[in-house]
Image 1: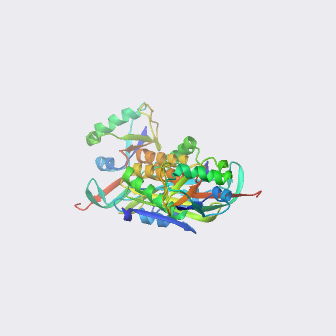
Image 2: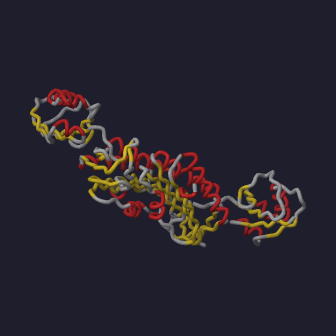
Length: 80
Length: 80
Length: 133
Length: 133
């Protein structure tokens, strides 16, 4: 399946570009996607923590990704 | 001694006029002044409660009045 | 302290912009404001207008005391407390409180303290005029 | 619910008057407002300007969620949440929150809830530009 990943804030500098398309096997959870991300982009281990949104909503770690999902990497926010 | 009494809010209707000059003996406290007021204007017993200010500040019951003090009758306030 | 406090008690329209401009400061990250407006009903009865009267010199003193206490208690930067007297129609503004502070928590607390205390201590009285007289 | 909530995420100047006009209602006695401004320093370092960027569609969704929760939790009447993106100079306004309610306590609580939650959940990021680069 194809997943489009968007990178924001500091994570965009770490990824080097945004969006990035990932070709993944079925059955990948949000948690698993984090691991894939850090494996492919070792710089991400420098980020203390980041949330993941799927299709514009914060996602639980156990959520299964589906084909054509848009995943966003959300480092700690600082609006307001 | 001469005391000028100002009446505000509902107390003005009860007093019928404002200011009213009181001629009092020395040694009258705020508490005593309340009693004199209710004695002279029995309608004041209808007011649930009222504060007394002396020279534009809220006064303790034990404060002694002095000649030329301005006393104000402050029924429950309702600004804001 | 004087250049941290802006008290106003006037017959006429209050200005949110004026309060904002007074308290805004480049060292502050947050402003909290409270605006009181005249409601069209009190306990279900339709209100036509309100009339506010004050013991003016004492009201100004008490508003100033509230401002001093708010600065002392919450370490805020500046505070404006404006109140109107005279006749006010529905939707018009009897009171505005504006507070600036380096941190928003203090601004909120001070703003709420100021309006709560004003309603308890400042010698101002409102008279409500109802539909049925 | 839609006519109780006014969300805005724009490049350009926010308007306190617009937020005030939106939430003001003749049935309400109190309005609480919060205005965030750009401070001239962060931890003692002089700030020149800020740049705000957002994941815009999600930021608007999250702001809307905050508004819905505030209405649900505090029973307020109306709420406006406006945020700016792009470059902002010192003293300029990245965020305004305005809340109207029959009673002031609820307005204050909802306003504070909204800004606290916005700072935790809404995907907006600020980048600070300092004197020394």
